[in-house]
Amino acid sequence: MRRSLLGCVVACLFFTTIAACQAVEMKRIAISMIVEVPQLLETKQGILKGLADRGFVEGQSLSIDYQTANGSMATQQQIARKFVADRPDVIVAITTATSQAMAAATKDIPLVFVTVIDPVRAKLIASYAKPGGNVTGVSDAPPIAEQLMLLREIMPKLHRLGFVYNPGLDSSMATLGWIKEQAARLNIEIEESTAPTPNEVIPATRKLIGKVDAIYVPNDTTVVASLEAIVKIGQETRTPIFTGETRGVERGALASVGLNYTQVGQLGGNMVADVLAGAKPGDIDSVIAYEKMPDFDVALNKKAATLMGVTLPDALVKRATKVIE
Image (cartoon, rainbow, N blue to C red):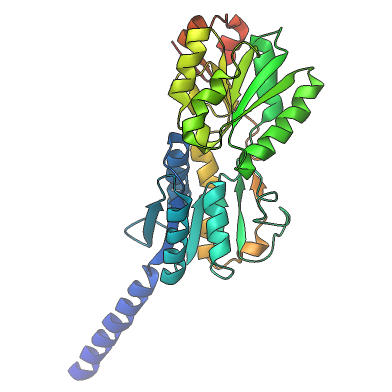
């Protein structure tokens, strides 16, 4: 009788241990971005939060391999090959360049992109609805119409807007197309200035001075990395500098209407969790983040307004979500 009871206890402990091991089975994901800038790091934190909210916690039920390419596409491609060789459960790609490198490296490992402005133009997906294949994700296309309305509210006489960008980035080319379309409706002319490399950003910005009423800096990784230098030019020449994301206002730009990138990341984190739970990426609709966020952040910088020769309307200051004195 005692032996039988002992055997039952041992058996229960054995199967309980197996069940516990199965319950804490570690999932593996690999995350990469082309360059570390504040909004992309916020995106990464949002992804981890979205995963944690679904029960996938780093160090407990989730193992993460994070790699940054430090701005080098060659390095990004090496990281892509490493990820494919390691065969994680999901690859998470932040930025268009990173997503394209990962998509070119694998057609079977699930891939979730986040902060890709135009994934169709980037040839990551054929359509947002049920994209098929091994790829889905979140577009961070900027709310261009709302941004231009903000610029016109601050500068009623705005007619010529400068646009500094890297023409080699699909995301920037997509933004250029959208801003030209929306600007035409407001009788605003877009003056382009290209900066294919980081060293060309400042000359490209200076080229616009005297030709435009203000300058718009899109979510372009090449250009945003030099934002403080662009802001300095704006201050020296009293040329208002606006950005496509609100974090730029904290770095000295005058104003922006934009997305909360932690929330953008959370959308991506939920998609990754769906895949880890058994869903196929191709069956998960890709989304445009601003369509899931009806309320946008409005950021203003009073000091920048003074230095750039602009008076902020009182009504705008009152409704802003963040005002930097």
